[in-house]
Image (cartoon, rainbow, N blue to C red; front, side, top):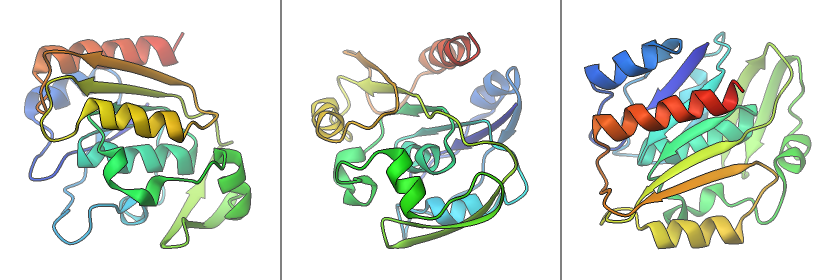
Length: 194
């Protein structure tokens, strides 16, 4: 299984987190410079043109991009404290992922080009049929960077056909402790492999 993990702003995937993820598959975790552009699923996908990404994960800014990539390629995502409400680029204005997929002329095989929200050009190859993109979202009730209530409100206003599993941990802040990370990754893989 190929796991694409996207770190947050001014952060990196820790060695401990990498070890947790390696139990489930090969880990791809690019170094992303968010200083000029926070929302860049197009650039991230271009780094892996020949990789069959099976799941997408991310924390904070990485979770924002993982959310978009999950919708684009139709793969499950595990998202820690995604700042969805702060970025209107990911709002599909009520369109389903299938509508976006169709509108952007993304095919199920061969080369595909997609214009994502009219601002982001994405080129990538599909090596298999686009699947469902369920999302497990973990929010920190004590996060002072990404407010759980705002994210829940955003999700409520922008429901897609993707299945959402949302967990708010009251004591969790913006940083994800290794025990929470480990437990949520284990739950995620148990759910998608069931």
